[in-house]
Image (cartoon, rainbow, N blue to C red; front, side, top):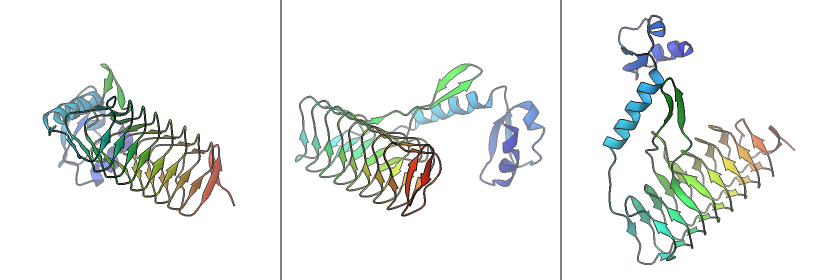
Length: 245
């Protein structure tokens, strides 16, 4: 998109770009290597997928001897680590690239470490983008039944802070950072790259839009749709959510 040309020229970290011929003519900087193609998005994310596969490292999964694993749970045999005294209940699924701390509980039917909802519309059709990050679940976390937590994407892993409690049927998308002692009510959906501070309460049925920040000690009241960042120590409610006294 041509609107990004000023950003490209200001950002000295950018060394090369995929670009259409028309937009290429608008770029004055001679320091940026240009690869002129018909569909930059398709070329970029195809290359991204290629490098993700090439750079993938595989290690054998490690499960603490004191962990309690249900016979019906499914745990990937690679790139998983489960800490001491952690409980994995019936039917829970632990996919690869998941690191779970000690004293955690993964309730029945939950899926942790799944791929996120990342697709690109291109001239060659819809292109799925491979998730290449990790899901870190810190100590003393509880994941409620039938919840889904997606692993990280690109440079940003998914992190669930220690002592956080997540209710049933919660969806947490890729690259979300959840602080310590956060309580998330059932049927909540947290979109990608959200940052949630420590000791936040999120009421049941809430929706958090992508890339917003929720300040520490804040409260999201039941059924709220949060589309803008929330400062520390605030209570919000509504659709869209607004600060209330």
